[in-house]
Length: 125
Image 1 (cartoon, rainbow, N blue to C red):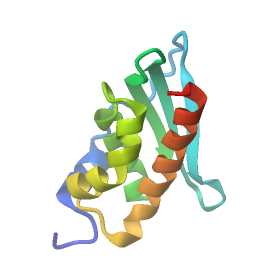
Image 2 (cartoon, rainbow, N blue to C red):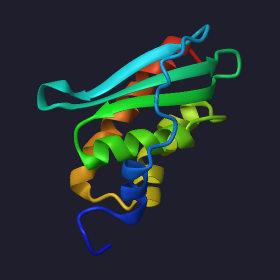
Image 3 (cartoon, rainbow, N blue to C red):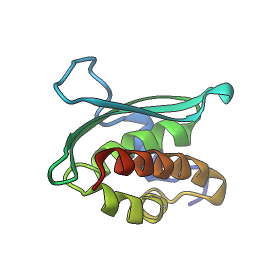
């Protein structure tokens, strides 16, 4: 990676996947993470299969830095079909690998890990 951001991260920043469409869905969960006081926030809109403990669909809204928006987009492609426990165990490493994140950008993956930890507790899987 030559610049501050990897091509993969920039791709998700410039062409975000699964932005929130504003539609309401039965069973929709809305989870927020980030540092709002610094203008960095990710809001995930999730449809989960509570019996299986998996995520069915995921959308996002984000504000802030390139990494906040790019990682927010990437996570919507990463979590569908996965069990919440699997996401917790692999999210940070998989995001770092897939997006070529630098240590300074890891803070965003840590926010998301805490968010999925909270979801895991809620789902009691």
